[in-house]
Image 1 (cartoon, rainbow, N blue to C red):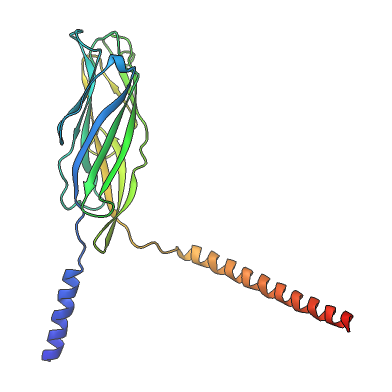
Image 2: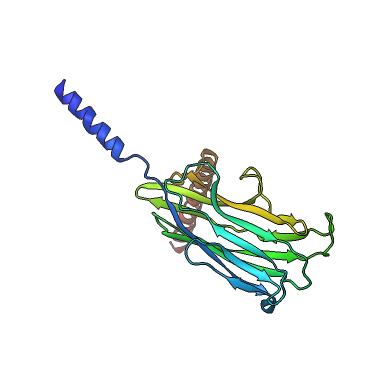
Length: 241
């Protein structure tokens, strides 16, 4: 009985030590760059996880529109299958007569796994509309390019799959690549990602079946070819004799 209890204790300790290690997403940072045209924009990228800004037109014009992006706080032990807040985007819409048409935002973060850092770049197209009250004609249109940041992250012996979901205005329920901002107002959207468990890749049963069929066909073809080669060799031997 004592040996059984000791074995159970060892197994329990092993199971506990092999439990899933958490994935941490830290040092979420970014920066605006590549404004078009560059002469119309003033870019100020904050240190660490402060708010990065781009404003237009350049001073001394007292009225300025612009974009803000505030990176999210560190995520320690990322919850699985749940939208994770990575940052907040804002468009400030003022009555102006000179604007940008596009700008990029370089985005990235660190992990406690492998790879230890991930990054990508968003491209924002800006449509500055008429400075008139009342939607929808006066709403500025912001279009964000799709970002394909999907990565397998290994933490110890555990594997996770990170997927950048995109921008949402309803807390991560739905996602959109285009936003409209009313004249004189501010449009806000949050950037979300998601982490899921990622098992070691194993072909689906159907794939295994297809592979088996293909292997069988290949074997049959090889056998048929060997049979033909043996027959040809026999015929050559007969002719030579």
